[in-house]
Length: 310
Ligand code: UDP
Ligand code: MG
Image (cartoon, rainbow, N blue to C red; front, side, top):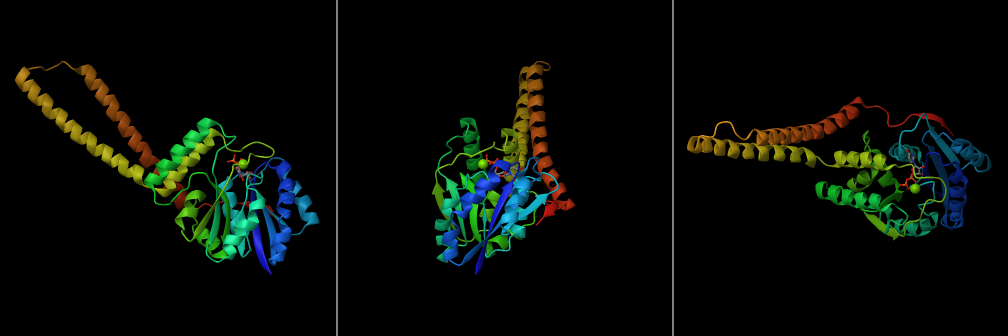
């Protein structure tokens, strides 16, 4: 008998815990036939509602349901890592609690893994139905930017919904970095991945936990975690401005010698000084971002802390 670990990160999802379980169990028969047993691990990311008690209720009726409850909110990335760490299965799958990752796709996903041709089966939504247009716009820009700058192959519309073999899970776990950006990590480890597409499903109950600002910071995290191109950009910009300054100095010297024009032009000077100090601070900011991430990384703080588990 093989084991499939289903990992479900939850943050204030009391309304979804049971619905998710019911929906997942619809695929139980399929997996029984294949001689595969479930293990459902809910990762409670410091929820302030009744998520934990909902999971406890499930555990009482079905001992295959487990809980790892964090001591506070550590973010979904920490949830993913904790889930994979606790998964004992021969396969593991990550799924959102809000049913935006339809469990009905699981049998087909398993089919690809079973064929032995793939090490992981990933999903991507082909549209962004139900999402504010401005959010979709920035999301698209982000994906095109990060793919130009990094070699991690980050797919637009990719969800964290992914079925993985043990080999793939161990590869992810071997990346113990503190600043975790799973979309990048999944691509970075390589292996053979099958992409499945599906139409966006809107959240069943409750609200999204990602504000625009949270997503923006997450995008910056992703860029810093997977490329150092912005640092090179800072140096290149610095070089360009040096060249520009030399040209300007030469022009001014020549002009003063030829025309004798000693004091005019202070407004343009002020503009240039402001521009260049702006560019300098911007570049310093880029360096600062990398430094701050390095600082957090060298501290080697735990990625999450467990308050309760069963
Ligand atoms: N989530 C989490 N910790 C957080 C934020 C979200 O574990 O700090 C979980 C959340 O409960 C859900 C999944 O991550 O199961 C995806 O979150 P959400 O549905 O809010 O994101 P969206 O689908 O809107 O991108
Ligand atoms: Mg969602």
